[in-house]
Length: 402
Figure 1 (tube, rainbow, N blue to C red):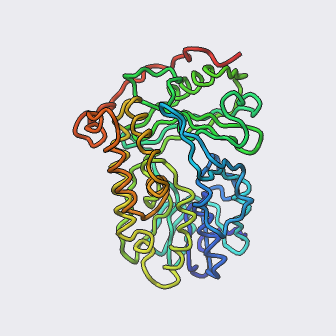
Figure 2: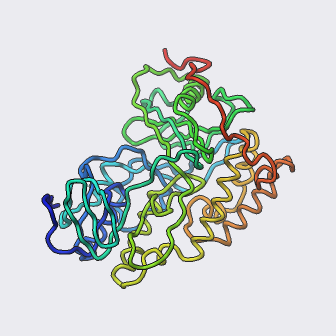
Figure 3: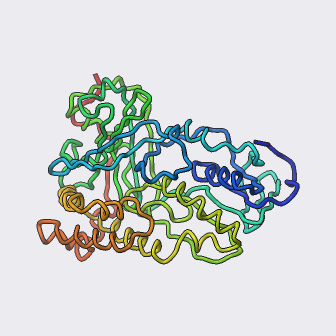
């Protein structure tokens, strides 16, 4: 990895990557491995990423080695009115392992913040200018405001303390059980909890699809209530993690001769699950193959089938964001009885529109009571939680601290 500074980077590169999060670093790494001249820019290119990243094991590209996986869960659980087991391996990515698997030894890496990003030129805040035949913008998204949002508050707990709820090799993808202290007439949230492979487990209360999201103080209160319900007592100084980002970024319009938005900035954020990294990693080579062929990377990334899938998923997040807790449980009960292909079409497949259409239709058709389906499709209570007042921070109903 060569670092450069000054007013102008010498010769034009084939590819410039703006932003070195996991997707940007993967893009730069794979372009470099394909023999392209690569320049990349990030304010802190050597900083290890903060968020915890997870995915289905079968989503990861074959070129990514097993060192990128920190922990693996063979059959994660979902709790609604009953337990569902998903016979599909799931994993938590190792931040250091993923970083090390994407070396940039032969790329030109510039430390700086992009001020202007154009189709063939990037100007940094200090006046440095980078030029490339193709520019990818992977800087993520701005704060969501009142958009459809994913919000989460995570607490990292030692494995032995977490054992009453989650043990090594086990994981909870969605836990809707009535243990978070929220009333039936309050916006819903669920618990996500997985072992991280470093001796800790993350307990993360999560809301999906609410306009503007749910505040951290409310999510933390609900997390602590859940832990207390299982007799888990905390010291009070455990590390925490916060997430708050929009779910409704649209795929970019096709057309050559423009900046290529990629990752969450390029519409790859899953509107229903909030996952992005694995799908982006799996599409890196598709984008770069288009660059090498002289065709439009956006068109390669977003054929009509993928755009239709994104549109249908947006219908799903609109529905999810207006349900009560009881309705959410009923809806997920219906969804997790769908065949494996239909589940995958909603949870991860980039362009399987036929299976996704079947999954959405049958989920609505088998959700009970019947009248709850009206909320799912938006005929009633379309703006149920809009402008909800969460009030000031409150203590959990049963303290989870010793």
